[in-house]
View 1 (tube, rainbow, N blue to C red):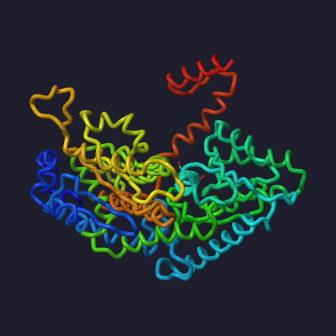
View 2: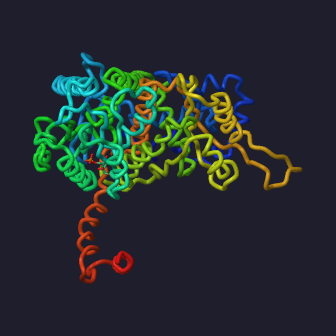
View 3: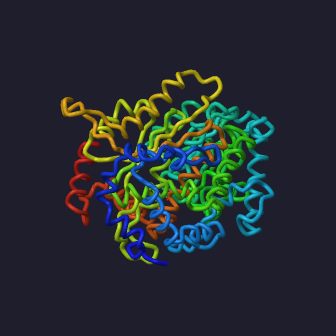
Length: 528
Ligand SMILES: O=P(O)(O)OC[C@H]1O[C@](O)(CO)[C@@H](O)[C@@H]1O
């Protein structure tokens, strides 16, 4: 496969970076009456409009040529076929196999398909029994609360989905505990009757310090509050790929729900990691989330590159981030229901693609993932949009909107949508002539995508998340990096383990740098 730098189309794009950065988006619309049709597409209930990017047909063709030369389609097929594309860990990457409808074949080896189906039906049976009260807590009380203890990928996906689909929730109330500072735990404990609470300990590795600490707290709370010898068996459920460690925590691995090493943590909400979702909205709605993601998978697998939404979204992101050096991207959903989207995408994009060596271990020669951040509109408009309109940095924005309001929800959908469309328009058009004071002028020509969902349903939500997963993959494929390991997060964990006794102990902290020693000393002093 050609390196990026050796590809003619990339060289041509690189050579015209300055011109592309100045390319007038308004001018592109003036030159092409059908621009919206030519630079937008629909798949799985989602419209992507990328016409407000400074990309003309020649630039798009060059970007597609880069994707072809980097064999994005071949790399995608290798992932979908279960080849060990996570080379540094020697693992396959098969989150797509988790969302194949029951009975569907051809997306993973038969053994994997069977395991997935078996686990999904175990989850559905258990969820149904808990939801309808057949499966009670240890003292015979119905389960009314679920505490999901997990962090990172074992937390963010279920949180995002449950906030988005809260109007559909008709099962136990789900509380999330991720941090180890005790705040979320205290809040959850304060709201839950221990005899009516199921604790989910969700951890792929079952070794994450925060999750294990919170699990110990929760188990101690249940033991002291529920008068039954079977409380842990009935009211604590482990969800993990590391069944051996379940026993170490004092739980029965036979009762645990499994996941597998071919599911990355940040790609795992479709597995048993999503059990809290299933408990809250029911197995049928959970299946719809999977079906929506599968619809996007099919589109990604089958659509030609030039009309393939994740491919185009990925190429637009590379165009902005790598070619034009626009190192930060904002994502702004115009519904509070998607308020967790930017937090979710931070892990998905930055943990996957925050890499500086390629798959062969050589330093990359181009910038990879920058920062992704955001907040909902319209509140974000009253916070950081000033910088988007007039700041010195050009920040590409993904606007995410929903056409049909959720039944029964109040609010002013027209005002919301008018703001959504007006913001992308304002970023593009700008404002000001020579007579206007400089402080009032907006430069305009600032790029954005608009991603419009027909409605916020389980299916479109699944498709939206899958869209961003595949966008992330496409970028990694073009850059030649491994999107599926995360060794960078390990060093801090190791050092935290080493520092803990130094911080706790009475002796001087030796063998650490001056700053850390100073901080430890001040911390001890102030802690008293
Ligand atoms: O599910 P686990 O193994 O507890 O890991 C939690 C999270 O920690 C990380 O390993 C690192 O932050 C993530 O990749 C993962 O989602």
